[in-house]
Length: 188
Image (cartoon, rainbow, N blue to C red; front, side, top):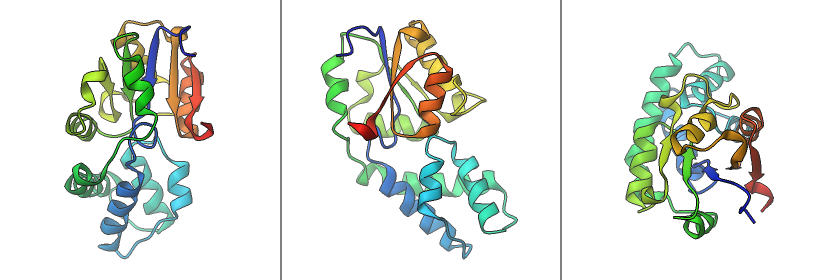
């Protein structure tokens, strides 16, 4: 099915790993300290964005005056404290395993590299990917194409010969802007 592609790129959160419940709980824990709340549907709409951008949206929604980068750091620390015990692979990991060694593969994620690397290593999945490109590796985040373009570059594959597996609108837009085909895993 994916024979015509020279490189496969996978989003991480919600695509190959079930991290969403953990991320939502971390937001609830951190925001509870400030008596703030968030609309889960609004956060889902920001999937693929760096944590500080989500923090900024939450701060604006709550009309607070917090620093979004500091709030994002607190949330990241909360996630790190619980992720390794709670995250499991999603069924799409079978595609990764089936194509391992047949095509170069990479992860292009809106998570920070420390979290992405820790999760993939902890779950024994890092070995499948020749590159992991995270939020702190690029200046322009999804829906900009930078994450996926850097994945292609690190795999040594032309962007137009890559396919991206994504679960978020921002990521699908980023793939389109990168000149790559995309699979919306929400439809699988």
